[in-house]
Length: 378
Image (cartoon, rainbow, N blue to C red; front, side, top):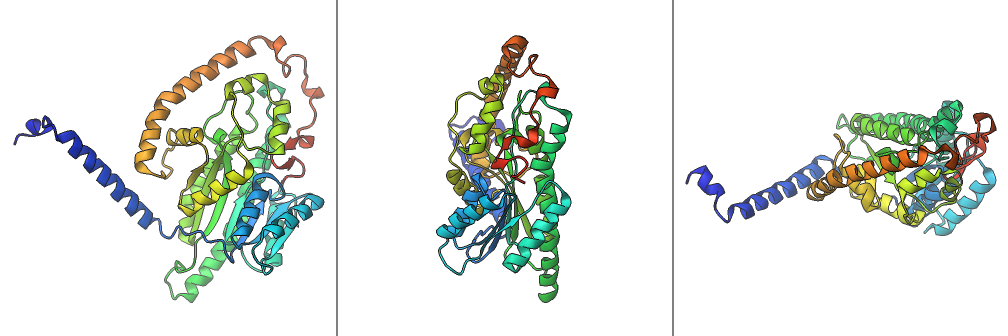
């Protein structure tokens, strides 16, 4: 039968759809097999969490304690850390679980190194899993920020995670090398994979007015995670990144105090996700072996429209969401551009412009951010 005639057969579309479906399922199975063991069983494992005294970090610690993990959280303020440890201990399923804390300033490489080493001493081993949750935001318009604000938020959101991850990866690599030697050259792949988990944001995919000091740091985390996902495979280390939407934390409420009206308008009305639900979604994504993890539909659509070479989650669903993103994202962009032009063209209506000089702006480091005060949440 000529090929053109075949295409005109009524059954051809159904056959093509069946083939595409079969190939997609086969692809998903093969990629899952090639990806190795995605098992994430926290029971008896050692989990290290920065920014673990409040918000998402604390809720992750509580959820993992319920699953039998040994946990060390890192932040600066000792009183808050002590209260957090008590909550985590109450969630633990066994009195044998180790629940510890380290007070450290992660705004420097030396502080990050010290935090990892102190945690190793307290727990007695290198972490199996690590979550870099420290971070925060103080939304303002670009011209309302002081120049040093950009450096501060880069340290708070990106460098603290990069420095901590490097120290952790070095420790993990050393143990991998020891396992490789012990397994007579098998490569240390017999042991459970260790994991590094970064916390980005929906604003690590898209950005708009009000997030000039925050969004670039979350884009940077995406680039780091993409790099390490590939590079650290050689050492049996998995990398994951969580793109969080708005979370119902004290930090989010504080952000709204400085958030420009144009930012609120572009964001629209949305219900922030409880941090406990976000923690459960993140853990579920890791158990499924997902690299890029989301917990709300909008962020998932944006993820599919901004994947680049990042691994997908479900080929068919991702394809459908990509088609939705191709339609929805230009509309969102045009609406945001319209709001920015109309609202920012009248400076007198903007509380953050014209009537406020850089000299009168309160220092960023005293502002509440993320899970704690910016100077304390490292």
